[in-house]
Image (cartoon, rainbow over all chains, first blue to last red; front, side, top):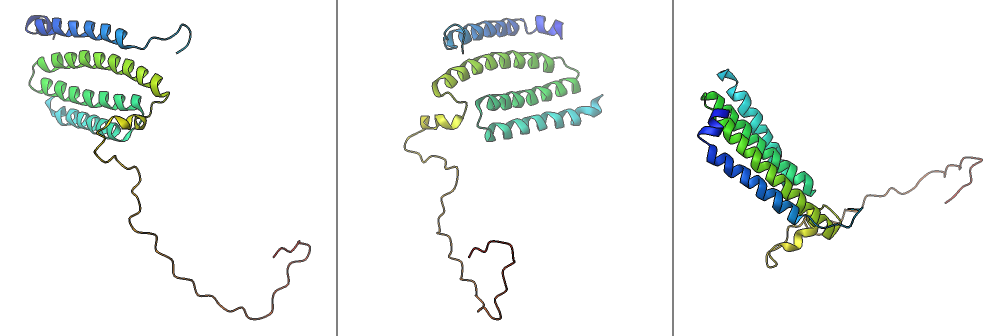
Length: 39
Length: 143
C-alpha cells in the first residue's frame, strides 16, 4: 500500500495534503470569532 | 478470504442505508453530518472489500483519500455549524427553512385535515328505571 501510495499515486497524495492544508486554513478563517472565555 | 466479500458488502450497505435514513430523518445538524459520514464510510468499506477481492491495493489507497476528504469535510462542517448555531442559538435545521424557494410550497410537518371530523352518531340512551341507589354513607355526596 505504501509503495503504491508514494509511487503511482504520489501526485494524488500531494494533492490530498494540499486539500487538507487549504481546508484547515479555510476552517480557521470561517470559524466565528468569539470573545475570550465563552463560546 | 474471498468468501467474505458478501459480508463486507453487507456491512457497507448497512452503514450506507443507516446513514441515508439518519440523514433524511434527523433534524439536528450534528447528527445530520454524522449520518453523512456514515454513508461515506459505508462506501469506503465497499472499496476495501473489492480491493481485497481483486488483490489490488488501489481500494485501500482510495479509502485513504476518502478519509482525507472526510476529515476536511468534518472540520468545515463543524465550523459552519458553529456559525449557524451562533445565529439561531439552536441546532434545529427547521429554523433555516426560510432559505428555500419562496414560491414553492413548504413541506408541511402535519397534513392538514382535508375533511372535517365526522360527527359521531349520538349514542342511544336508556331511560332510567328502578329505584335510585343510595349513595354510600360517610362520603360527601356530590351531584
